[in-house]
Image (cartoon, rainbow, N blue to C red; front, side, top):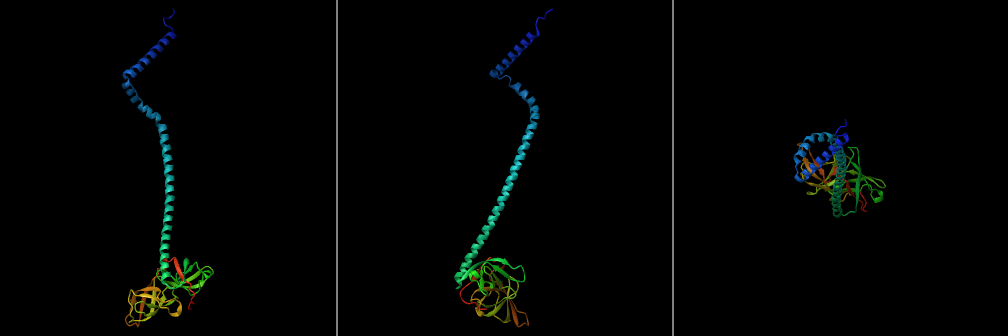
Length: 277
């Protein structure tokens, strides 16, 4: 017996029903917005599935973004560190230039006060021996420097030239233990001899009577005796006068007028007058 409906006709009917249902659903949704609740329910039900399905991609993207951000931050930090070092170096150079300019202005003031021909020089090397107070400057015979010439700083006397070379010279600082300098007290015109003590911040006036008129704060200057230095150059300031009971002489300790430990620029007297020995 032949069936009433063949499989082909049943499939066609099903297709027609499905298409009709789909078209009707779209019309209802577009005209009446009647499937909003259904869409919301379906979307809510499928949300966990979407999250699980998208987790690998999201995790991969997050890791890639984190790695890229970390790399960018590391590069930025390195750039900032380099820039910071550059700025610190520039700041140090600027500070040095300011200090040198200030020292140059002070030295120019010395040039105006002192009636001599002064040559600017720069300290290139300091003696490594703590018991020898010598520095090497970048001026020598070619610039007119001679042995015995006085060397000045902005605040006062520094020492004198003891060795000369074509383009360099050695300066014996007045605080060296072998150095002696004729001086006088500005206030009383008392003459004395200043001896180096081997300490950069100290000179000593010796063989002065215990009753000598000298007090802390007195200014010591060159006396001009022996012809090595012109008179009136600041040398030191008295910081302590020691008078021991029963002792015929007083010990007078002085602080150099120039800060010898921090000097970088100097002036060398290269006047045409003959230097006394």
